[in-house]
Amino acid sequence: MIITATHYLVLSLIIFCLGLVGVMVRRNFITVLMSLELMFNAVNLNLIAFSYRLDDLAGQVLAIFVITVAAAEAAIGLGLIIALVRLKDTVSLDEADVMRS
Amino acid sequence: MGFLIENFGAIFFFLVAALTVAGAVGVVTLRNPVHAALALLETFVMVAILFILRHAEFLAAVQVLVYAGGIMVLYLFVIMLVKVKDLRAEDAFLLNIAPLAVLGGVLLGALLAAGILLGTMAAGDGAVAALQTIGDETVGNTEAVGWLLFTKFLVPFEVVSVVLLVAMIGAIVFGRRDAALSGPGEGVEP
Image (cartoon, rainbow over all chains, first blue to last red):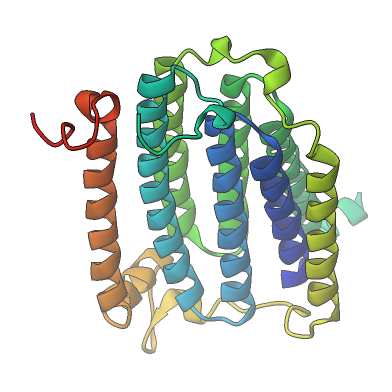
């Protein structure tokens, strides 16, 4: 049995949808960001699968850029969490309802 | 036994894929953020293994270094810095919209699955030739990625470094002690 790109696409689809449900359902800011990381990983898996399928290295380079953006997103998001904790003393997204203190 | 040996690659893939999905389910469902973070770590490592299976060895190393090493430590730092335990247990999920969210996820999944299964490009095995060559010369995957990154993708590479710089400055500004607590205009002053 040959593992084709379709197998990888279905796997990445499952992970992406799980991450999407996590972003929508979770209330904890930190776990929402983690679900976002899941979605980034699903996209990377897609890029790698097509890179191998089409025998083109561009997919791998694009995945590097996605990882960079994910790292930037994590830094900003965690900075926001720290600011929210200082302001409201909670990580619940329901409490994040003001734009100034 | 012969079946096992002939289909070893496929069996290995399905094993790793199952572990990946299990980790992802753990991230979404576990209530304790530390447990969710560990499930996420497991998913990262499994995705790195999948990268190796698709001949993206350099990316697998980057995945372990940046995700499992860097981002994960950042998450655990923040989880332990804030008192996550204070969040009440029933507050962990938005349970009143959870059925709608799951329905939305399933619908999107069905849509994408239809696209994948009806598409024609994904079928068939791939090739590894271009993933390990510069011009006509056969080199390692890392060297090939580096070559492409610093020739064809040089401008995006520089742009993404600016993105990282902006993210770094933004994180420092958000994390400043006086920025969050003071009123408008006062947060700028030291």
